Length: 516
Image (cartoon, helix red, strand yellow):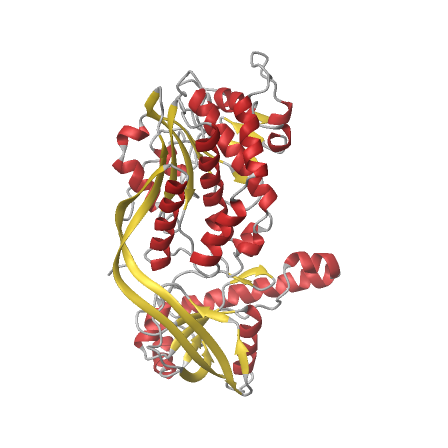
């Protein structure tokens, strides 16, 4: 390995490879034409997000999505299969209906968390109380019996339901700073309140459940109007529900002032036993080098507070559309082009890690992996992931991309290898050249990443169309390249301890998840 001291940062719109012809390529022209004149993106998005819906690992909807994708590929004359890699706790979400019935009547916005126990077809009505602020864990154990038959609120009451950008736009500097100071103090106090129970956020709901609580109530605000993050429950017998900031605050204030709110909860959920888990693999067989591979990569699963539109429905339909276009305009690639739609990325990159572990013959012959995950925006960042010579081939391939698409793309070479975050990291850890096509933000972290607002209407189809064109052209160029890509790694900077930086280690997938 060569040691390099210079990090190349390029904006591809201004990059010129003097030895590369700028002549028109009919394949590229046909990719752009098919993508713009015969786009299937809106149809794919509707079928996946609206009809099938969220794709929680182990759920019937996840299995339905796998079967749908195989059917779509076969309809385009693309070979496809669902490849089993493990098992997961099977669970199906039903109706969540939450009402405040005292001191007045109001329907509340909220839902049960993933894998939450249901209410057995019944409506459970009980008082709502706030987690006590006790002196220590001994005092908490004395308080714990008082939760019996009650819903217990375990999240901090937010001091404001307005996101910071709203305060910055309309508030005075003094009021904004005061709000932040108050919020920091409340956050610290709530953290201490939790700590003094002797439990963690993971074990506290279980302790409340064992003490006879009717259910656990929380609010994981995502710091934007109307957006809450919806993850998984830890309770096994009573429901865990997430309520919007606005309605949670109402319940909290009523309880705090002694007006004892009472809520009725109907949470339907079905345990479906042990479910098989899959990756969906599409394949366009190579003609000259069939045992070398270009992979278009996107995780297929999602959390289920919304419908997984931008995480990662958009990445999914980008790669499906790219495959559809390539099959039509470039049906006989030199190298085999695979589409990998991975399961259980959200629980630790499990599907892609399993694929890497199960297919060493593919991993050692990968030309390139292009992964898209982080939202609906057009691609604006590309890192070399620590591969020393990645600037040479990626830059060369990108010269074929239309100016309007490549102009916003900033790159960092050689970059640093990603250790997680999305499925490209599974391949990087195994030494395969894999790259993240990172997107423009579109308020992803606040409004759609793992939230109840991640739905079809958040998709920006012009940007998604641009990404499908980019993915198809990059796959075409990687397939055509006469040379096999270099896997030479850069020397990583020393860490804080003065030790040489280490390449991420390949990690084993969890092949049996959610099961005790």
